[in-house]
Image (cartoon, rainbow, N blue to C red; front, side, top):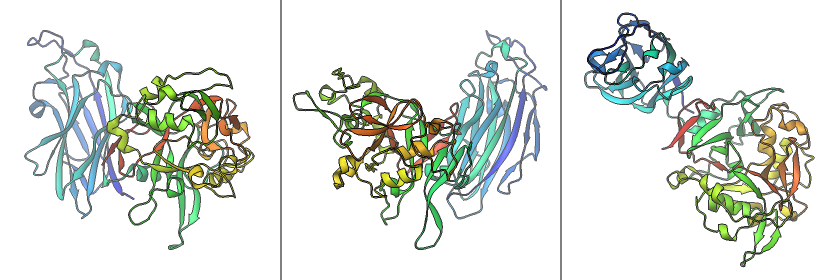
Length: 497
């Protein structure tokens, strides 16, 4: 796992002066000798600030050249190790009035290897910023030796600065983090609060432990977000997703070249993309044929992997969606195609094994459902099948498992073995959205799959019925988090190495 050290600085800017500059045809403001920028620096051996622990600067006003007249704070990072280290710079805004959300209120970050020739590595303005973590720079390589930085806040004197900016205050903390590069999976795992939680808990927790046969260590198959209010939002594909957790190959079958299982981040759409039957099928003449809880052949699989992942309307004319055993049909795939994965982002998503084992009822705990879904506890696939091609399928996109939903509830403790039939699983559960399909079939029939009801209960629903669907998928192990704090207002952003 990546190790990191961080340095936190507190910034307070008060705007208390205003004037009209005759050289411009609009009102601008300045605050000569009245604006104070204070940075309180924590101790970290590898990061130092040129002017000491307390920095006081003045004269934040309109400037034509920020290098000559902007307010500059200089800091440096010295890489003393042989490791490949990276620098992240985040601005955690605690107070940003609407009046200061202007394009002319700007920042720029410069870096240099010789403290003489500086290059711009990041810049922006505060127009669209909000309280919380705002990433200024991410995964910036820390070269051997010393890297010098200049962080500059300034007012662009070539732009209009509204008069109502006067008298407003801005405050934030600047966090400089240096350490080894972490994948998205590593970052989430490092948030784990342990493997036990009580009722009402919220956060990331390790689940489904096992003993490593070689080392004798206790390890975990997965790390999950538990509770009602968790910061697990991700902005991806121009849409909002949420992190179910991080899972090893016991859930997806992906291993590296040496056969070691990989930890992969599992995402689910933050909102339902529509309501569809689980398993309506059609013959070649586009006539209704039958319903099935066999995910490998039903329309849900086609919708998710052809129309959503492929972002294509191909095949829509031969897909039939039945609702509540009526003959109402729509051939319109517009909604799900519209939400589909942009071709430029499809390589973020791993091709994985989805397991299609299930129980014959909902009278089992989250622990037992987890084992059953993967073929344990003598479970079978739909209609009692054990045929390999029917209990496992290689796909990019699936749905959440029953166990995903059950583990996400913070209403029950980690050790609780309450059956899935309890409506209390909908309490304190960030995954709960009302009526929604899971990928898990019922094993004693060919026409029923498990879903979540409006009461929070995991129940059984005919594959012909309509219920909500949220595309679910695993990110590749080469995806990294580049910014954000996971909150709704400041979701994680990601990139592919």
